[in-house]
Image 1 (tube, rainbow over the protein chains, first blue to last red):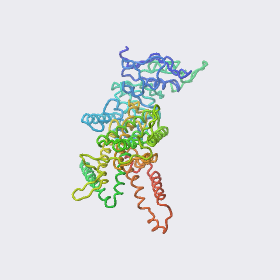
Image 2 (tube, rainbow over the protein chains, first blue to last red):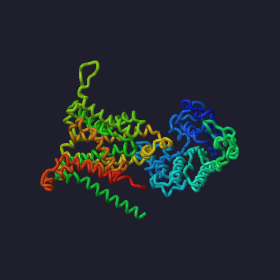
Image 3 (cartoon, rainbow over the protein chains, first blue to last red):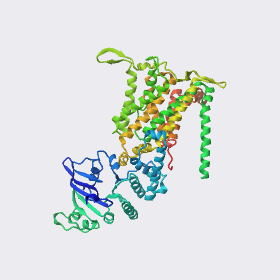
Image 4 (tube, rainbow over the protein chains, first blue to last red):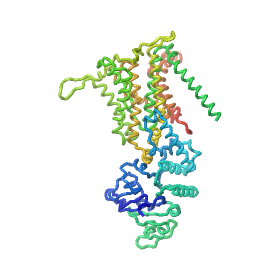
Length: 266
Length: 356
């Protein structure tokens, strides 16, 4: 069982002063799975994500990634171990071309330095050609090949999201973490996104999806964990989560024993 | 495909014409007077400075207001080790790399403490650094030690260092000039060719750096530091590299300046110089090498050209009398030109193209 898990968190706790942002959170993500992490605003999703990616250090608990303890001390080490991410509020390199954005993603898997850059030995020429070729492939993959030469800030919103995914894929990740990729997308764009996510998982890359669009999460994820006030309140298949009383309560209220209203959120 | 070949041919012809023009330029300028040749030489030094600062500000996006400090380090390295000041006369092939190396070291010294600063905060600290270097040059003529009364004269203070050796190789002194094919080339004209070689090396070096893995990382840093980190870029290392490479170019330019001028003093390395070099980068087009070169050429040459054009004679002809002192008029026209460029071309005169 454990060997098939790519990522596990065990008893992760993170406190900010008196506030316990994460309280003894444990979860595991199977290799090749599409895993959803959901919860109401302020539930601790982003905090969890930031501890995982080295922005914060955990107070207690530990992460395991790819059968090794995950112990990152600086954000740039995360890509090295094989976790790539996209951002909730798109963070592209706006003045760089679409192709260059993806080429930056290859940084962590290549090694030419300053002297290589200036003197350009054959090995650097080969490396540069390989970077460009792989980046073109990834642009084809997300359907942006035609825009390769444009500055990335000129892309439409949905295209920018896809470019972020291509850039993340360029780091050769074992797991890609998508932070609210469907935010601000219309229905057509969301369907295209869903197909892209399924294709990425089909190619063997584990997907961790942090998302508010419940229809997307329920349709695309095989496994979902729900956070509320820093605690994990549920963990299971989409069908299981939809019926879970604690989840319905967290999303729709229902304190003081009031009957929970039915809504499309669940 | 055929248009591509034709384009390349056109480019080649343009490059050849530019090369010939650059080679003949000092000879024509020489007919007008050696002062014009000096303007050309200073312009080339500014092109190198602007290219170096462009790595830091234009490509990596680190606002540096103390860049002239590296120019000073290069110039003083040459001045102190190739003059009667310490009675040392090291050859240029030791001095130029040494000056560039020490400047790069100074770049790292500036870079290390400001790694976490951005924007305005970074600008203030770098501005302070530039001033510190200038004040050091000004006051290191009486360096005392706590345990003795003796003082040491390291930089000769505000009087500056005079009698600096020019460039000479194989026993040939560049400053002395040369007669070739019946053509008399002055020392200044020969310096032009030396500077041109180093400028071309700088252009190629900086261009290659910018269009490399490191250059892309610098641009990513400029555009979004958090996203750059998430891509696995060690932003600390590449920031230091940007400061070091920018400083290296400045140091090289400084050494060449000292060799041509034969005299350095702290007042050549004031804040206004840093601002001027920054203006060249910004007005030309940040991060775009042809634009930066254009900016440097215009801003270095324009004040001198205006000096010759907008003199009292001209005012007599136009207004019948001298309305404004020529020096004031010169600054007025210069400032006005800068304001107009920023109003009508906010991205610079020649910014990087929208489509690659």
